[in-house]
Amino acid sequence: MRLVTAIVKPFKLDDVKTALEVFGVQGMTVSEVQGFGRQRGHTEVYRGAEYAVSFVPKVRIEVLVADADAADVLEVVAKAAQTGSIGDGKVWTTPVEDVVRVRTGERGVDAL
Amino acid sequence: MPEIDSGTTAWVLASAALVLFMTPGLAFFYGGMTRNKSVLNMLMMSFSAIGIVSVLWVLYGYTLAFGVDAGGGLIGDLSQLGLKATTTASATNGLADYVFVAFQMMFAIITLALISGAVADRMKFGAWVLFSVLWITVVYFPVAHWVFAFGTPLEEGGTGGAGAASAYTAGTGGWIVSKLGALDFAGGTAVHINAGAAALALVLVLGKRHGFGRDPMRPHNLPLVMIGTGILWFGWFGFNAGSALGANGIAGLAFVNTQVATAAAMLAWIGTERLRDGHATTLGAASGAVAGLVAITPACGSVTPLGAILVGLVAGGLCCLAVTLKHRAGYDDALDVVGVHLVGGLAGTLMIGLVASDTSTGSTDLRGLFYGGGLSLLGKQALAALTVCAYSFVLTLLIALVVKAVIGLRISEDDEVTGIDQTAHAETGYELGGSLGGMSSALRATSDATASHQRVSS
Image (cartoon, rainbow over all chains, first blue to last red; front, side, top):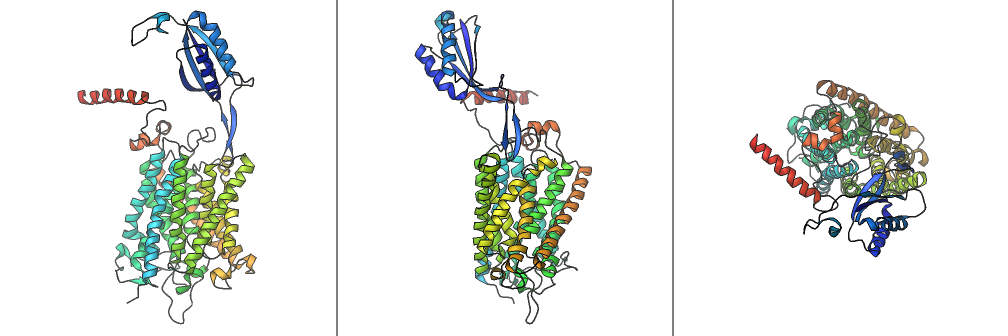
């Protein structure tokens, strides 16, 4: 099993969620996060004073998938989240050793 | 026995309540502008001002401000100590004296509260309380005498004072209103220039907030700011129209002028920032309205409604530019008390010298430069404004240094970063669950249970 983690632009969340549902993913975890990549932060002006904003708001999406689906899910998320402009984010996968479904005690791929 | 006019007394009674309401309004206006970790401290500075000043006013404040002039128009004598010479039957020019006591008490309260916006996030609450007692005594009570003490009622054949003091014998009251004859209808000098100059002096001694100039420190609750602005605007009709001390045409003029100057200033502020920063902000609308209210305060009884629009436009634009001064000059006036109250107060007080109209003042001697009155009124306005500014700045600087030496002005950096609400008042403004639902309340329940277990066992 693998954990797919995606950091995307907040307004692309709906597109990614829909694409994942169409693909057949059963669940996901979403959180609001802040950070920067190669785009760095930006400056903003408020009440006549300029401030550096070093962290940009992003959405993190996490999906647990079977090994066989990992490459496809990575592709689906990347495609749905892409705008082509700077700050689109990143998607990566990491290996997951074991999973338990809390309600039933099912383990491994059965718990996905 | 002096006669009590029921119309006058009823209107000023209602106005006194309106002016009191401004201080909670100010607390919300300032409270929304702080970060969420210091909203309660900001509210507490305003509410403590209500507590401290109300009591001191009855004990000795009223007599220092409105007792018989003790000489030179500088301060009142002790004839009203504990309000001992005021009775239910005593009245001045138709207004029951107790009502005037109440009305002016509210002015003293809000003037002190205005200063608190500058010291957001970082001033020890005890230091604020000590500062409050010293400042209201040494700075406000004398200055209120200069500007608001009209003196003794005019007797037949006597010479009246200028403008609002025309029903009082010239030279028997405070030096600005009764001798100099500068026009300050409701307190541009005594309230706004005074509070603004004090705020500047206090923050110079207090120092900057941790992260000033680096972190944005945006307002945490703009709807609260707008509620506060609405309450201030509403209450200000008592402040300005009530200062007519009568239910009459002057009160009506002051009311209309207050409305249009405030409206014009709000438009000027958001227009200025739209051009400068690209956005018309909610905070700008609120600040612009308050800048207009400040600037029209001294002028509302001496200009026409057209003049009031001009005063508002100038004040709104000027104050919008002035709030960026703190970043260039490096003083941390957190919520722009200097940029709005000092600058707005100066603008309004000085513009009387330009746009005062004899149709409003009722005397051809009281005309501004634009109405053919020459420079004499402008000169008087400048002298009154600069004297109050200098007195307030210097005395506040000394008071701040004394409080710093005796008990210290600032909370520790650690407490400031954690948040003064929690460290000084043991409370937080908002006990809300996380935006995703029950998670954080579940966590809190767990930690509360642990804490209570520890208390029992220790």
